[in-house]
Every structure is written in C-alpha cells, then in structure tokens.
Image 1 (cartoon, rainbow, N blue to C red):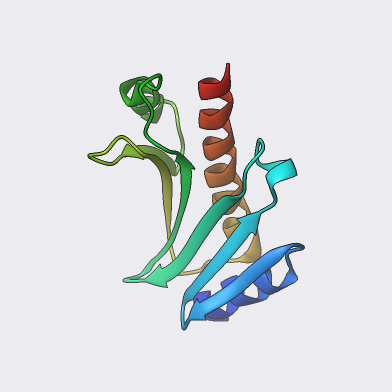
Image 2: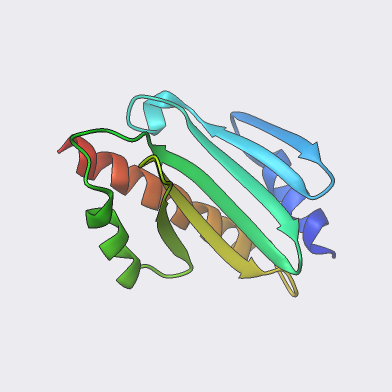
Length: 125
C-alpha cells in the first residue's frame, strides 16, 4: 500500500476533526480539552519520500525562552522543536515514506503531539 493510502486510512479513522487538504496532505485538530486548553493544529504531508508532521505548540511570548525548548532536541527521537524568528514554537517530525505502516504513522503523530503538549506544559509551569 502506498504511503498516501496508509496515512489517509489512518487519519480518516481518527476521532474528532480531521480533513484532507490535498493529495498527500491532511489536517488534524486535537480538541482543547486534550491539548492543554486550546486546540492543537497538526499538519501531515507525504512528499519527497517523507512523512512530515508539524504542529504549532506555542505563540511567542515575553515570558517564554524558546532556547530552553531547543535544548530538548538533544533528547528527542524523530521529532524536533523549532522556533520562528518571531519566537513561535513548532514541533516537526519526519519518517521515510517507503515501507510506512499504520504503526509508523501513529508513532510519529504521537511523538509530535506529545512534544507540543510537553512544550505547553513547560510554559504553563
């Protein structure tokens, strides 16, 4: 089964708000009550031989030091934190699309969401 088909079947079976944006692109919204008080928007894309997932974790804030989160990159697997020039925090993850199965999609999505929620927890603490 092609990676696009694997991801499409997986995303279609998720509870909550999901949408197919284009061929090989999906959007997932994690509900506020599961995402530390406000929705978590997750983008999923199969392109250039990769499954790419990204989520907006935190908006720039004077009381947020993004460099603290970037140090977490040394401890993560498959995913990484990124900071925009304005200070917004994103979580990104990539896996090879070749041989992709439902377990791989689940693992990558789970790690990206876990990272975004960990950033929100750290900021709220």
